[in-house]
View 1 (cartoon, helix red, strand yellow):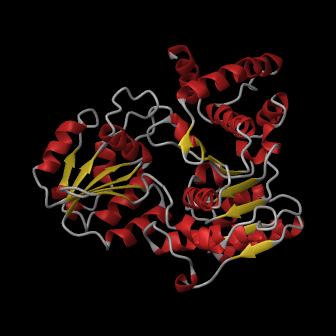
View 2 (tube, rainbow, N blue to C red; view 1 turned 180 degrees about the horizontal axis):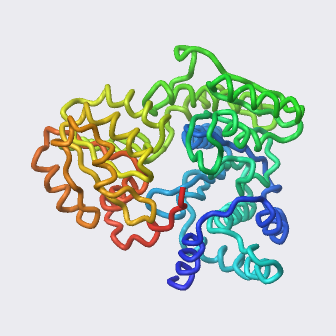
Length: 417
């Protein structure tokens, strides 16, 4: 197992390299497993994880065998690859990666730079797993962007673009138009595409691509009151529920569902780390929130949380840290800043520098390596609820601690996103 993990660690540490040549070569060598089942392909700045979880829940409630590929994971690597909610066991991931490794190494020998990345290997593992397990449908979430994302070798039955806002601008573009162009890269000829509530610049760009590809475009714009209910909190989640519901209606001729069980599926969605409330004294809320769209959703949900509350924050990049910290600082009773052991993680000094001076007195330095001590301080104030937000690494670290998964092997295998 250690040799296999070392191989994945080395791939992860190389970072990301975008383009589809490697992935097309890899899946071709594997017999194109992604073509063995119907696929729903989901991209977007925010909401794509929620929509994927909702789609999986709806189809599972209707008796289908559902494959789900998402990223990154919170605690265990196998969370990325699920079938009917069951995560892929590490032993099965190891077996699959070992079968792919010789192909990957041959690719690199044939042409320098052709060795697949960590994310490409995991995407191939998911495609192969879903074929082996004969899923009825696979819900595939893009990792980053869409046009050059490794998942974009699929020919889906339906494409979904959930939202467009400024994020990953260094890779996807500095304007909504440019980012929309990258997300629109998942649109395929003649394949319907559903979009959420998008800015005009974004929907204009997507409309041009859809028209060029002769892809029927379904743009949702109904009022919140018209959107379906879901067990996930927030008006944005009702919009995501509307996207999922519209998607399954379009695909009803291929994958029939009943309206009653569709609603049942929307009311039992499992989405750890996204406004996940863990009751107790105090109440603990875990909400990965790392960009502007996520901050807006976080603020909406914080209005429903009983005060006072303490906020733990970690972040990647000063811009992301600034958005989260400026939003929560006026509301928090105390702010605890953590620095994850990742190359691009914000330091305590970075986060303090983007904290409004008025709130510096609220700030303390969190100890990433001693969460037990940090939780002792929380337990000493049981009337103050705790919100853990910002980087998904912090949310995963806390979940791992709570689940007593101290070895950390799986939690470290994250994408550099």
